[in-house]
Image (cartoon, rainbow, N blue to C red; front, side):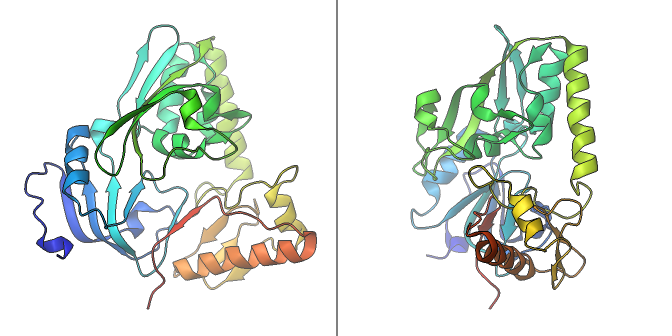
Length: 301
């Protein structure tokens, strides 16, 4: 049975077929998804997962800051959590509870205003809490694991799971939680701090990002993970690729671990540029860079 013929009438959230995905990626490129769903709340998400045929692939996206959708689009269902998953609350003992679609920067600011230290690094991550959980997101000396207490998630079958620190299996830019789990919220814990000093620290991070990264361009954040003991940007720079272009895609002149999509760029241009960078660095330094950006979907036919 085609997805269009399936009965989704019990759902309360917004559902769209053949939905364009380019607007949801910071690169602003890529083809459509067969189905795009924004659940009204966790109960609606569980119902959707139970109604969706088990052989239909699922992709969950946040703000799209580290996402590259290929030009042929995504054959399956894309889920983007909505307002019900954006809540942030301050709890006793310097704890912060946040929905998976809450922006990292908003969580950092609310913690700062409440005098809770340890969250400033989130200001340097242009994504959501769900992405931070999935990738053990980190920046400017901090990682998600440093403040993590527990998380809640829904698996492919619509079953609720609770994760403590050990269950997350944190490592560098990775967690060992099954790929089919969709995080819905998390609890974090910081320590007492001076709101003024914390906000100053966040301002310094903002300034550092604006002067060292191409923040006001169509980019996808850090392209490659840093190899052990090395910096990806240094390897790319040493390979002579600063400003190198393929089609409408360019390696940033400001920070070589960022790819930029200029007007007319395609997802194929961006992916080809990244692969060329990997090839050149491997040839020069014997190191194969690993993509940090998530690449999904099919090439254009």
